[in-house]
Length: 126
Image 1 (cartoon, helix red, strand yellow):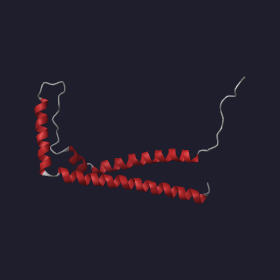
Image 2 (cartoon, rainbow, N blue to C red):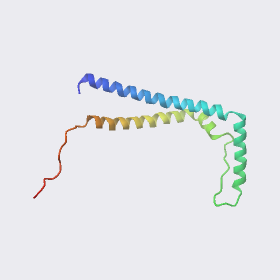
Image 3 (cartoon, helix red, strand yellow):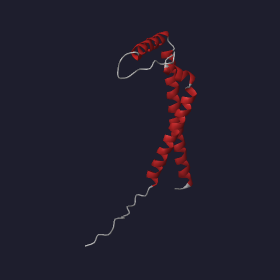
Image 4 (cartoon, rainbow, N blue to C red):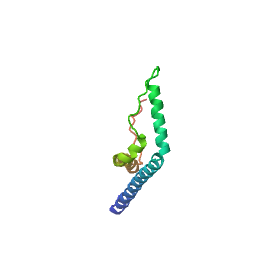
């Protein structure tokens, strides 16, 4: 592969990587905005409080599984997207980067492999 083709190939991979990261960042930002819009509402807080009360009642029942009462006063999705958004974003970028690098490694191996068939089977004996 000559230098010009290699540069075009590298630019294509860079563009694909930037696009993938843009999708990850955009979707995480959208998910955060939707989560904050839904769970900041007082109705959502009321539903969470009702669910916690129901969990408290079920925790004292005689069943095969004891349900623990959630410690969080606020809905967990709200706490995650409000207080730990940067951690979630960094982890999403890291994991998607590793996934992209793995995909790139395999795809480059497929594209650079020889299409020439090499017969490595043992010779037939008669």
